[in-house]
Image (cartoon, rainbow over the protein chains, first blue to last red):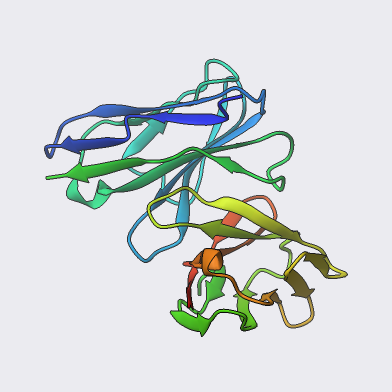
Amino acid sequence: NAGVTQTPKFRILKIGQSMTLQCTQDMNHNYMYWYRQDPGMGLKLIYYSVGAGITDKGEVPNGYNVSRSTTEDFPLRLELAAPSQTSVYFCASSYRVREETQYFGPGTRLLVL
Amino acid sequence: RKEVEQDPGPFNVPEGATVAFNCTYSNSASQSFFWYRQDCRKEPKLLMSVYSSGNEDGRFTAQLNRASQYISLLIRDSKLSDSATYLCVGGGNQFYFGTGTSLTVIP
């Protein structure tokens, strides 16, 4: 199993540009999550999904959108990039309820200039 | 008030030392607790879950004190490879991560 994979690894965006961060897991996990981690800070939950077709907001959803059309994929969309969205983005998944161990992808480093 | 708080450190300890980290949580309804390890510029990885009765995994011991709302991680006989940031995680319907405690084990 590849586990949780994320693309791209690194991206530079200009203010106002849009992009999609890709996340795929091959563990047949129901739950998937998007976090952002700013320097010296803990991870903050952006959005999560409990299964295909179901998504919900986390702690910091503003400026982002998600979709979950399949069990495997959970893309994160930035519509109008802002410097405040410069961060490292981690996707994670877990099998059952949200309290289960989460498996993280390697992260996407995003710089908005 | 943050949901989960931990001392950011850094903790610099010699090889073979014992080091302890504490973490407090604000929501008394939190049900699940974990310690994750994060190496520099890498993703977090589960170190261990934290059970009410306390649990041990080799050199690592985790404790939960619900009355005082804190969890702890004890590392015995520190190795150079233990150098990392340790994230405390707690929650019920949603996970909350602490900002992490930095540990450097010195030869």
